[in-house]
Length: 257
Length: 257
DNA sequence: CTTAGAATGCGTCGTTATGACACAATGCTA
DNA sequence: TAGCATTGTGTCATAACGACGCATTCTAAG
Image (cartoon, rainbow over all chains, first blue to last red; front, side, top):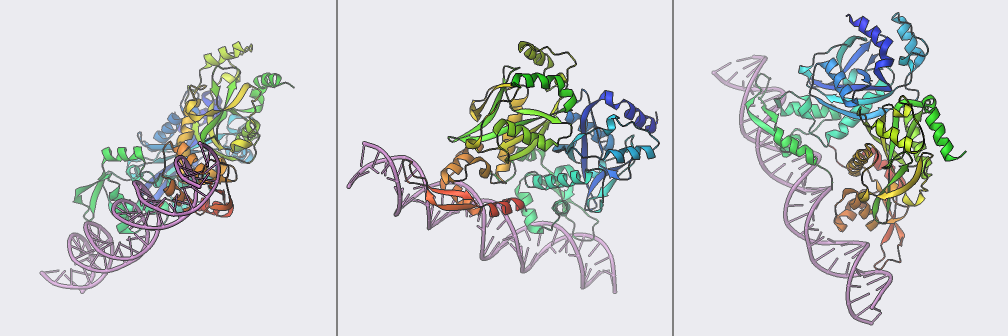
């Protein structure tokens, strides 16, 4: 079964197996070489890059569908995945463009085809450990790769807007959750953690205050090892103290009355 | 056109006019006599009270649909309305119960009727000024009234869960937004505002610290009037300074790096 | 081998925000 | 007119936060 065949199969049979009107799109964040990355796919039927997304099987939970899409695209099972917004404008997609795109691929689609119907899409964002990901194009895509957050141009349909909303949400959550756990390898240095925050927030932070605040949360374990090999003083390695981490999450980290 | 007739019409024609698979439910909060209230409806076809909800017309934006439902139920146009979560479990509703409920109403529904299909529902919460609301049952409901947040028992389907999630969201947002603007009348006293916060957060707050913090936001105007008639010292009346209010909202009130 | 450069570990200081509480002022009621 | 509950305002100690200094450690250049 070639991907191309599956692609055509999905196009032909989708109406029977998927929940109508509903789709989902995933904003998959990774962190690599001090840059925040997003996983995008190049759909066959469009000129633009797009967020990996999919449809919901008729008997499938929405969250399970998102988990499935993520697994398919990244190979990772157990990751941080969170629904953040529903995009429900009546004119989200441009049907004429869709049709002509499919035509370019040599696929003729009738005017009442289910893919041309209106969809309301649920946005999920995921935080994944970059090194663990095996990028995998889906059957309808010809490519799948990480993009630097700052180098992303126009995207398919309203996907750019979805991405921006995911980033906004991530920035808000950052003040409440020690997000780093999901984006960094198990062992990491304080400068790496700081760079992650700086990248997401798009601003520089004071090195010493950052360290004080982070350690103040009480969810980090400083290991006895250091990261040698850099051109300068070797920084300590840290890892998250899962017991305290979970405990802190339950209460919320700061803020509140 | 009686409501009953409209009800039957909707049941008959819904498949043609609504977006399939998608519904929305509104958690409408109000504040009255120092109690947080939620507007619930008693659907004809069920024994339980339910959140006011509805479906999305085929050419209607999701947000517009929510605004429409709200307008129909409360008579209010321009209110604070925010999407907060999508509920997408495959087994959200119990079809057998639905059918038997309709049967009780004397309405026979075939096993493939659109109302028995699976729906993914988008939760919205609204903050409204209690006194401005004219509660209005919709065509499928026999009653519509305010419930004290603490006196709500079991609800229709997963609506209790939706309500809880709305409350959680409201509590989170409370730390970022001066929610009071939408729930209180234009003029209000500091004790009233405090009571609102205490009710939502379900905890008592120090009177003096609360006042310091609230005024510290710089979004309140203290009026020259006081609220006479109480049995004690007359408290000052306040109102929101909309210019500063909007400005503050843009930046987020506190927290953050 | 030595040293310069650069990054890290650790601490200080003044300011601001926060929590706990005291006391005076006000307005109804008895 | 006195009593009392409630509101307005202020104080104080402590914690949190932002800005910054200085010593330490590692690599690489000389």
